[in-house]
Image (cartoon, rainbow, N blue to C red; front, side, top):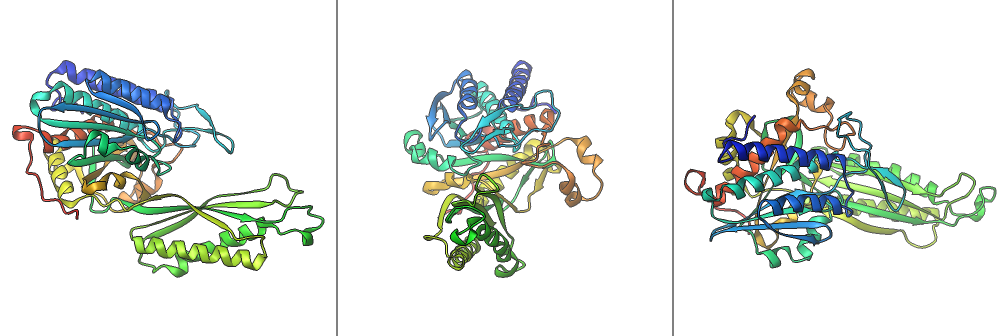
Length: 431
């Protein structure tokens, strides 16, 4: 698929796609974890500067903000993410990551297993296209490279660093995310991702020698009991028809088998489509933890801290309608699908602060050959294809990247475009 509909000349078209693919492969081969995205940020910032944007780095951590003003008009914010995941890549790609990072716990492999490298490259490409063809639009573009999305902390950090005060409140904030759909497609929905709360629970014990357990309070036994009881929250406390999940993703205690540990730590993530359900689950977690610690006689109360949370990602209906219409014009109806709600979580809703209307869509990433090779209906295919956070996650960049560029360009032009690019501005529904 070409992007000739986007670029004013063939030379610009070729340069945009070639440079975007080069950036994608570079970022994929050199991923950085949340909060450590210094080189990723600089690579993205350099592309924006090359497209004529006024660029600031170090916003809310390693965040990048590029601004391009082209006369009076609306301000459109386009966001992509900088960070990668602690996953060991198994794709076999020639540009596969071999990166290792040091965390506070251990050395871990690092991989772009969620498509953030694809998102950044698409945004850099869209910025280049729009900068090269300024006759088609009027207004201001804000290209935002957000840090620490995987920890759900980066969007809030950028806002706390004055994003809307320093660069102005945008009229609309737009973002896209790769998904295990056929590359070349985009998909829209009323509810895109779930709300999420992540807790870190610390249980104090009384360490000692395993030959004298009666003189100790073993936090491992208490933690194991808690982990088992937490599974009853989803199965017995939440209505069966209510979409929700609870996952214990981290459990650590001690360092040797012949030492009773002094403490244990449990990491719990809850996700749901309802804020009330999330609150109900969190209350149940706290009751179970406190009751188990009381029963075990642990010294002191357990410490329960919220380490990350995300709001339900429900884009503005008017924005969704406008962007979907722009995408249908750009791609044809056959390549614009619907998106069922997902229990994945994302901190993009933070950009809805100050009443900013948001738009969000999914970007297909699976190669046509992969999609055809898996038998069954869409649900069966999704169950067997390597999706986000898989060590085998490998977007078909030759199709997904130009689609991602065009999706951002056409969405932005529906606000700031002139002539046929300009769509009717809908009535947004945010209060």
